[in-house]
View (cartoon, each protein chain N blue to C red):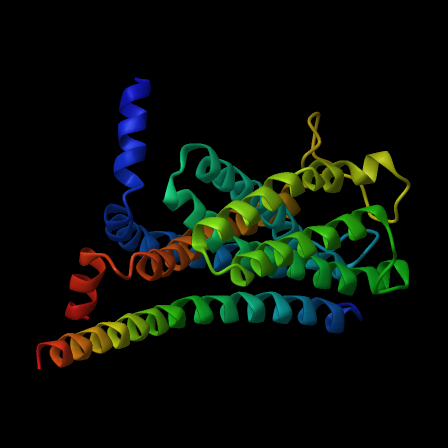
Length: 53
Length: 249
């Protein structure tokens, strides 16, 4: 890289590192949302069964 | 004609319809982004010749410039979505604006960091308080401001309104960033690709740049749909269609 390898490769590393992190965090947030809604549904079902008893 | 477009907008903006359609589009956008990135990087890093003045250091252009373009493009997309949400009360538009903000902030951050890494060997400094750099930094802060408002306000409607207004007001910064190199004396170089008469960059260097720009656009399209789908699930968590869908997962 003609003496500029440090600057060039760091630029590419940071770019793709940030984009990969963003992709990972976006994909993993679906699991969080699904688990949150599942927990809420479970809680509501338990509350309903308690009211019936 | 107008009524047909309006009907299409209303159909597509239904969260349930959007969730299904976006799910089908994401793999196509992601595959396109990946293919174009590989092609663009190959041409940019191995085929394009070194610059006659900057040598090999100019290769930072293939990530720096597309990231800077995306930071502006996404901000405008976010402001337009926020306006649609505010004017026509289309909830999906607010979702798109909210899903776009972290992606835009990431691109603004990349543009600043890679610009800084390019600036050191060319200007002798990682950072200068130059009009282009400072206005891009303000753009990053506008993204942060939008995200902070979204998470600070509990009521979603109010959060969308407040952050949407910030997005719309902040759009004034976009032409400032673009024309800063013409309006002020700056260290940053002037426009090379977007000049209307003729781009002052050789075709062998321009093609990988355009490929990378298109790859980043497709990446944004895929990711904004992923994030918007998650947001739709969360916002509609009390609706029947979401509960039925989650029970199947």
